Image 1: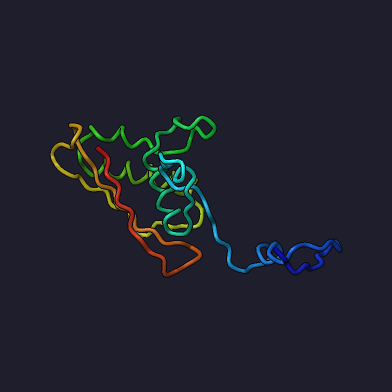
Image 2 (image 1 turned 135 degrees about the vertical axis):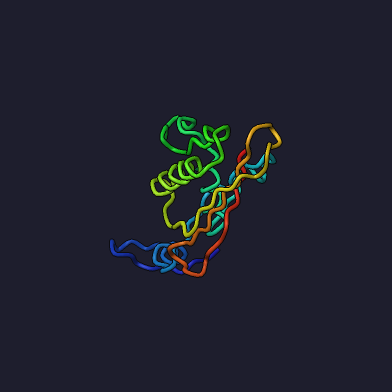
Amino acid sequence: MAYSNTVNVYGVKSPSFIEKSFTSKKKRTVGLAFPLGKARQELFKQRSGVELVKDAITQLIKTRKGERIMLPSFGCNLDAYLFQPLDETTFNGIKQEILTSFERYIVGARILKLTVLPLGEAGPLGGNSLKITLRVRLEEDDLAIFDIPITLS
């Protein structure tokens, strides 16, 4: 494989594909898909852009605080709200929990709208079920606006 070599600022020749990767104007954030795959070829599947942000937000909301050893404040304690009365006080507490965690751990996105609704009398596991919908916009791309529906039961 032949690469054209260029001289960098230190006078060392480096392959052109390395120079292009460090000098490209558009940054592309890449991360692991959530949840991790079970098959060997899907175990470390990568995601980027909207899919990466959706996975990160879903993981943040469905993780309890204290569940991750190295980040004990990562997550939301939303399961504490499942058996509370379905009123404005409960919904505002859920929204505040999500907004606080989102602001602290999600970079490169902004919540445009956050709704919390009761899903029905009793969920599949018994007790109350909640439907949370976030309308999110990526900061790097004004046209990337998407909804993330999450069900808690």
